[in-house]
Amino acid sequence: MIMDPRHLRSRFVRKHELVAEAIRVAKIIGLDIAESDFNKVTLDQLRQAFINRTINKLLWSITETKKKPPQKQAHRTIQDQAERGREIAKHDKRYTM
Image (cartoon, rainbow, N blue to C red; front, side):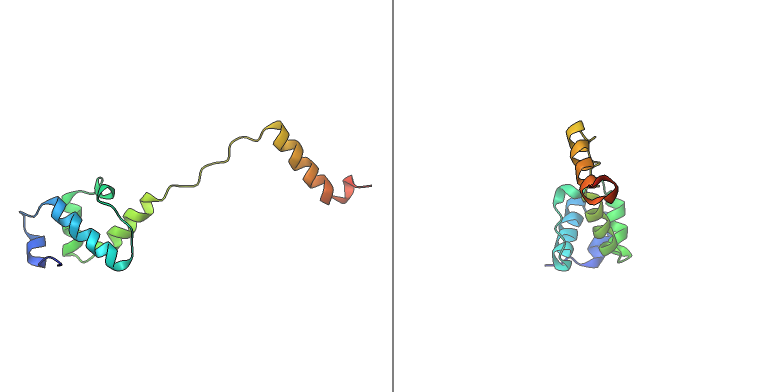
């Protein structure tokens, strides 16, 4: 059951209640968010998101921060560089006979 909006605006609402409500909304729109993903979100941010009806935007931003940026490739070893050079040489007419 979705909470009454008047209760969500109340000063006495607890963060875990808002988090539970936000998780319900996330499931409705098809996002996979856990309770631990809300650690960096303050109670006031959650309350304002529900009041201003911008909870979807907040949930999407949480899922975007969950995604890790791609890792940089480690330095190539000499063997990797030699293999790459051979591959280039196969296709480059200057190095073929």
